[in-house]
Each structure stands twice: as structure tokens, then as C-alpha cells.
Amino acid sequence: MNPATLTSKKINKKKILNYIITHESVTRIKLTAELGLSAGTVTNIVTELINQDILWESSEAYYKRGRKTKCLKFNGDFACVICVEMSERDELIITVCNLLGCRIATKTIGITFAVTKENPITDVIRAIISSICSFMEELEEGVRQKLCALAVSISGMVDTKNLVDIPIYNWKSVNLSAPLQASIHLPVYIENVTRIKSVYEVRYTEPVKNIIYLNMSPGIGIAHYFNGKLIQGHNGISGEAGHMTLNVDGEQCYCGNYGCFEMYCGHKSLLNRAKRALATINTHDVLFELVNHQNKPLNLDTLALAHRMGSVYINELLMETGKYLGSGIASLYNIFDPDTVIISGYGADFDSFILGIAQAEARSRIVNTFRREMRFEHARLKKEEGYKAISAYVLNDKLEELASR
Image (cartoon, rainbow, N blue to C red; front, side, top):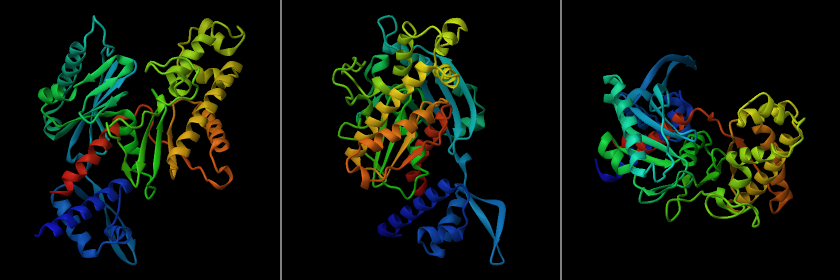
């Protein structure tokens, strides 16, 4: 087979795989109609993928014009992924799942991620590697044999040299990939949590091509897609929208700058502002009652409860946050002019309240206000489903390999 034919086949294979993964269950007829491929091309590629155990035909079928047609599905059990999340609660969440994000096993291990004199980066990395290795040893042999990758989601920056910076933990130019690779003996992916989540969300936005994915927890970050491709920037760290300035005279951010987007809309900032307010707000306010009298922890769930119960202070705090968020979104819209903005909130009950205010504020601030349509979507992924995003990120990269088989 000549190189041009091989390239064309690979492209068509990837198209078919992408379409089936996104739509979950598809017929050959649907593939032919939607992808503009000939029936012969679809049949040949699908047959090959079935023989390679990458696709399978489901037992379900439906009748079209008197003919029984079977549905095609991607075989998520073709391989497994170890998904690692560094939780803000100083917990390493390790999950093994198949390529479609179906969870097989999970374990949460307490680790102090912050680097100090007493807890140097070498000790932190050793603890992470030891935890992952122990988890792998506990897996069934059949699962271990199917492992195709290890992927780590971090709340920080990963540059083009694969060096990691996590300011909240005092990580600076840390090479996490090499020691993991040497110990785990699997391909290793390390990426920013916002980018990882964006891959999962963008999967369901076809045929939209120009997208801003805005992640609000734990920090503020964006992933920008142009013509369907993720823009990474010269140093590989584009998307740090949380550190664009909303208030030049604002309080200092952990990054060293002042008045950062994250200091007004990040969920840690939200909690810090609520904590400071407890010393000054009316003692009859619901938040004061919940925290100081009922001993509720000061977290997002407690803020949500206070909001539902009518806390005047929390209502004002959320309204202010929504306005700042709307101002930030307007800036992003003016800079990138996207087709749509996908917003992943805090995972709290008050998300819709804040986002409603933010959208109204953004619409009032964009240029050409009356002739521009702003399109917003809420993220599909739930707060506790990070492993689904990580597996989608790995699968997105592995498609190239699967299409080359």
C-alpha cells in the first residue's frame, strides 16, 4: 500500500473512531452518511477494527427500511489507564479505569504536597511513586496486563520540557515525568487539570471549532481551542487566565502579582473572603450561626447551605464574585471571540446563581454588545469525575496509535 493510501486510511480510521466514541453507539449507515465516506471504505475499516478488538458489534439492533442493522461501539476494555489526581486536600486519588472512563478500582492516599525544608521535593516525589506502585501491586493480574498509560492531573503548569510548576505547593521546575517513567514502566502523561478536563468536554461540542473552556476549581484556568486544536503557547503554558489582572490595586496573589482573576473568583479566594468576614458580619447572619454555633466546616457546601438558608452576606459575596467572573469572561470574549464558552464551576449548589450573574455581566461588557451573540454551556463533568477526564485525555492521544494499527 503506497504512503498516500496509508495516510488516507489512517485519517478515515481516526474519523470513524472519534465519531463512535463521541456518539457511543453508531451504525455503519450512519457513519457513511455523517462522515462522507463510501460504504466500502466504512465496511473495510470497521471490519479491521473489529478484528483488532478495538470495536465490537452490540447485540442491540434496529430495523431500517425492513433491514436489521447492528450498532457499533468502541471497546473501552481494550486497555486500562491509571489516573492520578493531586487533590487540594493533600490526597492522592489513584483510579484505574478503561479507555472510556469506567472505573475499575480506586484508592485515596494522604500525602503532603507542599514543599518545605522539612518536606523536600524528593520526599514528595518518593511518596507519590510509592503510593502508585503499591496501588498497582494490588490490582488483578488481568487489569495490570491491560495497563497502557499513567496520567497525572495537576493544578499547575507543565511546560514544553515537561517540567512542572505548582505555585500553591512551592513546586518549581520539577521533573516528575522521568522518575515516574523509570518506576512505573508505562507511558507517562502529566498535564494541567484544566486542559485535561477540556478534552473531555470538547469531545461533545462538535461541530463547534473555536472554544474557550473555563475551569473555576481549584483555581481559574482556560483551555483555548482554535479550529478544533488546543492552543498551547510558545512555552506550553497558555491558559493561565487566573493571573490576568482584574484590579491593579487588589490584594496580592500567591503568584506575586496583584488583583488576579483568581483572587476574586477562585474557590479558595471565595473561602478566604468568607473566613475574613466571619469577624465582622452580623452575628445573626446564617453563615455566622452555621460556622460558630453549629460548628460546620467553612467549605463550599457550608456556603451553599448558608445561601439556601438566606444568608445576606453570602448572597452579596456570590453576587460580587459573579460580577468579577462576568468581567473576566467579557475580557476573554473580546480577546478570542469564541463560538462558545464552556464553564466548569465549583461543583457547588450555588454555581447556577453565580453563572447567571456572570453571564449577564459579561453580556453588558463585551464590545459590539447588541450585535454579538454570547453562547455558554455548562460542563458535563461532575466534580468527583476527574478520572473520566484523565482517561479521555489519554484516549485522545492513543487514537493516533490505534488508527495506525
